[in-house]
Length: 113
Image (cartoon, rainbow, N blue to C red; front, side, top):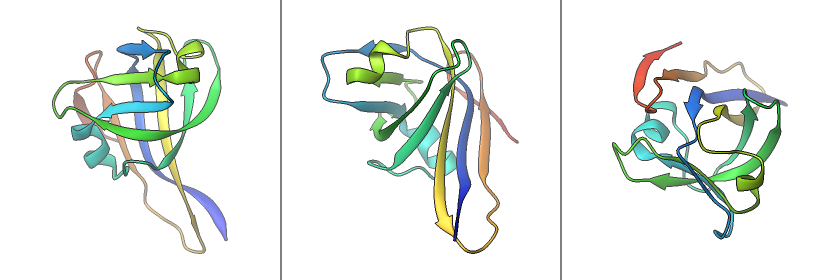
């Protein structure tokens, strides 16, 4: 069995950082659907601006809002305006074709990779 990339949102922009929230990352539901991420699913986030890497879980945000909000402790590491990559993985014994997308500066879908 191997951990294999299954979902990727590339070049997303942090729109909010909410330190007082319990934890997680809020992602526009349009984007979670495009890549197949589930609410509550563990994700790896890499910060293209600073190089920081962290794990948290998904909360679905308002559809069409473009929201990518770092909540709780993640708000210390992901600041508004920074570029990130959000990745989901699956433990499997078979190769998987990941759903990978690129978004614009307002976190709107541009294309599949």
